[in-house]
Length: 350
Image 1: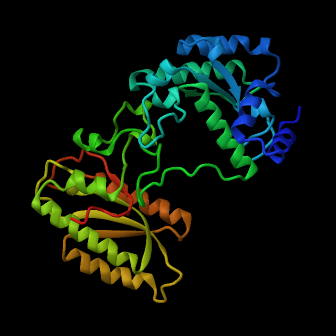
Image 2 (image 1 turned 180 degrees about the vertical axis):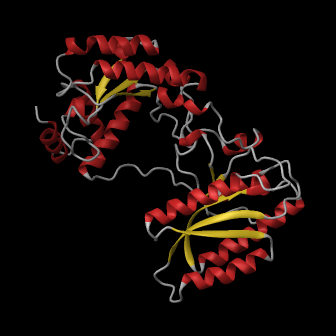
Image 3 (image 1 turned 90 degrees about the vertical axis):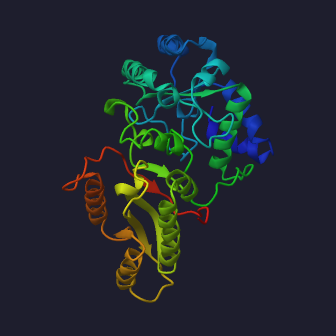
């Protein structure tokens, strides 16, 4: 069976993507080999996650022979064995990522309770090694019911065909992308804005500093005193000024302002990652130099990293400012807290 041709034929006959997905899930898995040879692995996944083997289904390029994401043909050296598990109990064991839809896929390696993740990852490593000659890795996604899996597969089929599906809920401008951070920002601040939530061996970009926040969440978390609210209002004006000159992508915030125990921070230390705007005629460097002096009058200590310069320069500057913001200055206590990666969307107007 050639799934690529079959999918296009079904689409040409106006068969709905959900019906195509449902039929494909009942069809053969082209690149998984014979069922008997995979039985030990499927039993291993079943036992590891305490679900019936019947709940485990093969999806992805191992089923279709190609990736619905980019059309690339299945290759044992690079293609995963993607498994979908339909089990409501296991789905509830996985925590829901921030801003995820109610029945979106969840992943045990990412969404299990923190104290279980390391053991699960090691177990999946061992399972993957057992079939390393046939697949790059064994990946598992969990769905609450078969309808949710069918919807997810239908979305991939639509993307493959270049057909628009139901519009997703709009994300507010500047809001943190779904899945980029695993813990609500206010909870992180309440915990003291630590550099890591978990032991370093279990840390990922989603559960470690710098912590991702949009403007509204940042203002709620750090606007606890009248002086802090003044600083936040000044930051809002500074970002509005910058928007007239450059495109602001994100900001790295550190120093005493992100120490919530300090009600009277001296200033707000911030690094702005920006690109030049094609519609602005004057040279941005000079404008930024003048604005820097202006912002300092309101205790906004702003530095800049150009995103349209050489990549090595952006890495160098980012590393420098990260270390600077984490360093202890003479006569001050060691800084144990992390940093904030601020997205420049609309704030509360404080």
